[in-house]
Structures are given as C-alpha cells and as structure tokens.
Length: 119
Length: 231
Image (tube, rainbow over all chains, first blue to last red; front, side, top):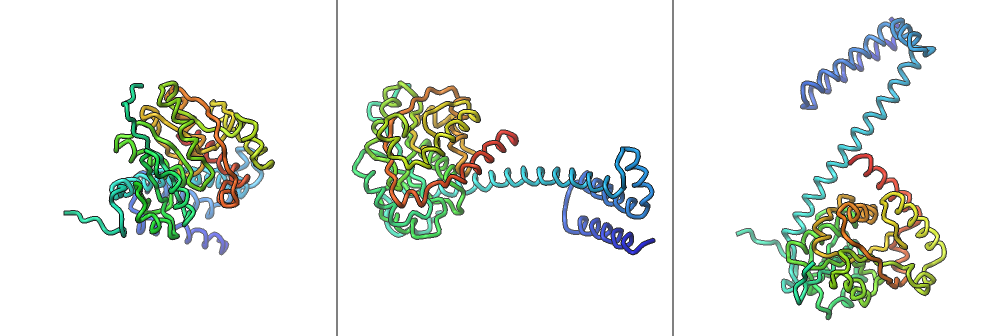
C-alpha cells in the first residue's frame, strides 16, 4: 500500500468521525455520508476497481472518472447550500420585519428612542 | 375599487445610511396629508437618531436586508394601519413630491390598481437622464420585459403607487434590488390593472453616487433568474 492510500483512508475515517460527532442529522444523511466515505476508501485502497469502472463507462483513468463525479457532486452541493441560504435569508427577513413592525414609532411618539416596556 | 371619501395615503420611504439628506427629503413630504412611513434598513450611521423627532412613522430593521425588504416592511405596516393607497418613494431628492398626486390620481379614481412612474413618457424627462444611464435603462427595459412579461417604458424607477388591493396581492421576497422586477411579475400574476405616469427625476450628485451602478444591473438579472429557478 502506498502512503497516499493510507492518508486518504485516514482522512475519510476522520470525516465520518467528525460528522457523527459534530452534526446532529437524520439517519438518511448519516447513511449517505458513511456510504460515500466507504466508497472513497474502497477507491483509495483498490485503484484497480476504479480503473475497471472507468474503462466500463469509457473514461481513460480512474482518477478522471473520480474527478468528473466530484465536479458534479460539488455542483450539487453548491445548489443545495444555495437554496438553504436563500430560505435562511427569508427566515431572517421575516424575523427582522416583525421586529420592525412591532417596535414601530408613530408620528406622535417623538423623542429619544427608548426601550419599549413590556408590561 | 370603492375608496373612502378621505382615503389614507401611506408614503413608504426606505432609508439606508442616508444621514442628514433623509431629513431634508422628509421635510418636503411633510405638510401634505400623507402618512409617511420611514423604514430604516439597519443603518449604521446617524440615520435612525436623526429621525427621532420627525413626525413620521418610524420602523427599523435590526439588520440590513436590502431595499426590497424595507419596502415590503413598510407595506406590511401600512396595510396593518389601514392604508387605502401606498406610495413607494425615494427620499434622496430624486423623486418629486408633486408627482405623488400625478401617480395617485389613477389609483384614487379607480382607473388602475398600480401606477408606475416613468422617466420616458415625456421627452424633457428623458433628456434629463445622463446619457450612459439612459442606455443602461433602455437595456433594462428590454431585459425586464423578457423576464417579467410586463413591457414598460421605464425600469427600476422605484416610484410606484398601489391600491390596497394591489398591495395585499404583493409579497416581495427579493430583498435587494431585484424586487423591482419581482414586483412586476407579481402585478402580472395578480392580474391587477396598471398604468404608467410621467415623473421627473432630479439627478443630483448625491443620488448619482448613491444610486445603482450599471454593473449592479447584472447582479439584478442574476437574482431574477435565480428566483425563477428556485421558486
């Protein structure tokens, strides 16, 4: 086994470890992450398998096949992240709007802005 | 639409880091029978403090969200407070207070639910626009028409009057400048009647500096396109 294979496998194990430790997510997400990580480890450990898969779909090298898949994957994650950010932005907007409307000051209510009493 | 004999007209003025200029703009609005609603979009300068003694409705976003969000906040507030007619107005001295009457007229008479200001209906108004700006606007008109299906003579003018019915049908989700295109899409979907009215825009040094750069137009188009995809 070459050193790079070991490094990649250790990094993937760390990814799984970090994911389970830091992120509380649904069972489906966990299964997906483990599946991807295991697939990555197999690819790192057995480059011949990747090479055969690449040849089967008409790509020259295993590394190229992996790169194409990674590009598509990155694009997909970008989109997911983007739509999450947008919906987050919408939530913040709704919050900020209700804060603004609830604390509105009317024309008669002049003077130094002070904290509204709640009682 | 049946309007009361003494309709309440709410003028919404979004403000972000306008400082003392805003106060001058507001002074022009006072003395008319308008309810003025200033929405401070999370300014980091003295804007909010300078408003403290202004006889207007004052709302403040705790964080900066963008002009579209500020306008929607103003509309939400105005509708809650019984507005019959809502005016979108810029206080940076670009829009003329006198033009409010021009734009509210078709809405008050029931001829239309939405009146949109246009700089291109009168030759003298169009001539007053700096040349490069005119080119950008002409291009924006075409892009806007293609994107929204609403063909106007002007784009991103920002001077609008809406009936209560129209304002209730509109919910701006586009926080930044793309709201100007979004509002057209929503007007079309709601099937409300709209007209264009001539407005004069004064291009002061301040408004030019503060206003949209041509490059921003690209960002607006991207926002509008993304909205179409992620709906």
